[in-house]
Amino acid sequence: MNERADFKGKTALVTGAASGMGKETALLLGSEGCTVLIADVNADRLHETSKRLDEMGVINKEYHVDLARADKVERMADSIIEEFGGLDILVNAAGVTMMGDLVDVPLEEWRRVMGVNFWGTLHTIHFLLPSMVAQKRGSIVNVVSGAGLFGLFSTGPYTASKFAVMGLSETIYDEVREHNIRVTAYCPGDTATPIFDKMKIYTWDPDKLRKVINSGFKLTSPEVQAQRIIKAIERGRALETADLFTVACYNLKRFCPPLFRLLSRLGRAAFNRYVK
Ligand SMILES: NC(=O)c1ccc[n+]([C@@H]2O[C@H](COP(=O)([O-])OP(=O)(O)OC[C@H]3O[C@@H](n4cnc5c(N)ncnc54)[C@H](O)[C@@H]3O)[C@@H](O)[C@H]2O)c1
Image (cartoon, rainbow, N blue to C red; front, side):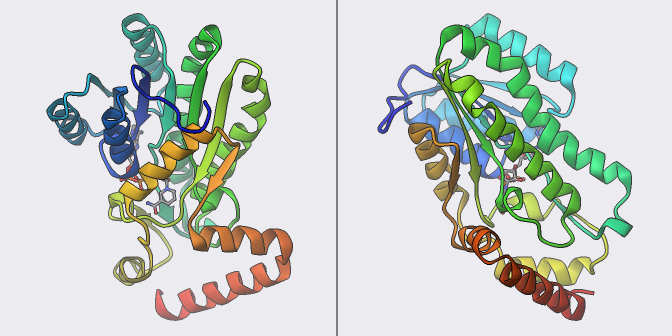
């Protein structure tokens, strides 16, 4: 899609639409004239998003689905293709996070985080991309993270899952471009959403960590991130990132790796002192 895309009459699927960035993106796409399909594992909150879309007069449909399950996503994709004929826009915003050192994190947690963040993203693309290829148009935005661009301590499963989504997004960019489809890896920085309230915490003192997160993180609102996701759909670039901390860390890592490592070590030392 080009700059100033016309969203009217387009069909969009937004995952993670029960909360945070996914919810705000679904509402914004609805207000731009899309038919909005919304998917999430949280049925009650997903229904609230659907009710908001109803009030706005937006055609919408809810899919209560665990995206980590290939069979469930395949069923959702089949029903989307049958009822709507395919998709114009796919926004993969579902995700979970955690914090903890490798030695403390059980394999189950790796599977949970990879299951939603990586496999969930792959599942929707795997089952819905063929319909986009057939209609020779489409936009995919994978909501990644700064954690898809650089690795910071104590986020192993989360960072690995986001690097995986980054690799997936980058490698399919040119594969799908020849079918007039764009894939964007959108990397938001810390954002005021409920994701941190639900996060699993290992290694660190949960109360102290939550205090740090509530005082220093959550710099951007999900509404602003939704606007950037819409912009990302319009531009169709491979990578989009805007938040200052994310851009600064990414550039430090690329252009001055020793300084990036030093700051990471200092951050870790501060955590050892104040968050244990
Ligand atoms: N909030 C931040 O600071 C931040 C920063 C960078 C990247 N991100 C990424 O942005 C995306 C959106 O996060 P958010 O902050 O809006 O979080 P959020 O918790 O508000 O929303 C995430 C949604 O994903 C859903 N979800 C979780 N597991 C699922 C599953 N198995 N199947 C279907 N749905 C599932 C949750 O129910 C929730 O509604 C995530 O991928 C997250 O990793 C968030």
